[in-house]
Image (tube, rainbow, N blue to C red):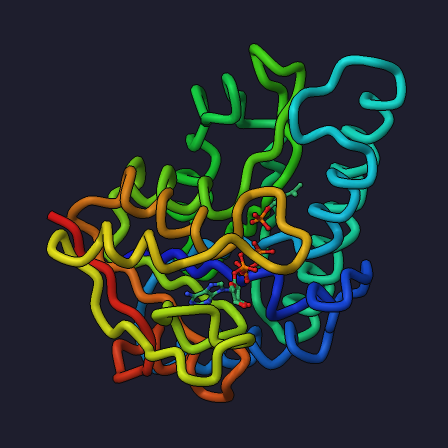
Length: 268
Ligand code: ATP
Ligand code: IP8
C-alpha cells in the first residue's frame, strides 16, 4: 500500500496574515472530511504534518528565541512555544476525531534533536509501528521547538520534518498544502501578475529560488523560500506537489492522484 505525507500549512488553518493566535477549525474540518472521503475511495497510508502559523512563529519572534535558548526568559519562550503548538495540535486532534479519523499525535520535541537548526536524530520507529498496526491510523506531527546541541533549543519547521520523514520512510508522494495555488514567479498575494510555475526540476530550480521571497507574514523559517530549499536539499526522487489546500476538493483529489492545479517538484 502506498504511503503519503500531507503537510497542512499554517497559513491555511490559522490567522497567519493577521498574526493572531487563532485556529480556523472549520477549515481544518473541511480538510479532514476530504481525507476521509479520499480514504474511502483509494487505499493509502497517511502521515499528516501541520505548520505553526502564529501559534509558533509569533511566540518565537516575541521571545526572540530563533538564535538560541539560553537565559530564563528564553527557556520560558521555548516551553511556551511548545505548549502553544500543542494547543494548535489539539484542535487538529479534536476535529479529526469528530470526523471519524484515527489521528495519533506525535510530539516532535520528544523524538527529534537538532544541531544548529538541522535535524541530527529523529526516532521514527513509533511512526513505523503505528502505520504497520493499521492503515487507518494517521500519525500527526507539527512544527515545534526541540533540543538543539549548539543552540539549547531551536525551531524545527514542519517543512523540515516532511522531507526527513519522506526519505526515511521511503514514502511514495509528498503533498504540501498552503494558501496559494503553488509557487509563482513572485508572491501572488502582492503581485497580481505573478505566474504559476507548474514544474520545478534541476533545470529551473536556481532561478525559482532567486524569485521566491521569504514570507511577508511573521515566519521564522523563511516561508515559501525555506520550503523549497528544504525540498531541494533532501527530497530527491520523491514527487512533491505544492497546492492550495483551501480550495474545496483539492485535498481529496491530490490524495486520489487526480489532477490538481499546483507546482510539481521532481528532482533526480
Ligand atoms: P507555515 O510555515 O506556517 O506552515 P505555510 O507552509 O502554509 O505556513 P508559508 O510558509 O507562509 O506557508 O508560505 C506561503 C506563503 O508564501 C504564501 O501565503 C505567499 O504569500 C508567500 N509567497 C512568497 N513568495 C511566493 C511565491 N513566489 N510563490 C508562492 N507563494 C509565495
Ligand atoms: O510553520 C514552525 O513550523 P512551520 C514551528 O511548519 C515553530 O515552519 C515553533 C515556529
